[in-house]
Length: 141
View (cartoon, rainbow, N blue to C red):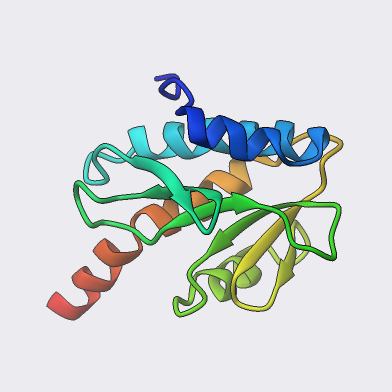
């Protein structure tokens, strides 16, 4: 299922980034929607801006943690940002120690050139989109 049309404000935010970063983040956006569609319990995503950056929320189901797209001031990489109060980036680091560059507990950095590591990235996105479901299931045990 293709991603929905780009909301005007999200398009503007991506367009304000250097072109290679914006282009890479559009690829990540497609992957976010494809990954969400592959999970029955994620539901429809809300696409909006948070802190001026494209953000993807699981408002409908409450299944996941917000994913934001942007860049870090000191980097030429595209950044996929996660809530720093989660264990998501630590989990990604454990699973893919050499696949991505990370920043603290909040960002996964992607080079703007070369092939997007779709398989590994979709695992990370899937973990974020189902973060609260996984935590609820563990509590229920």
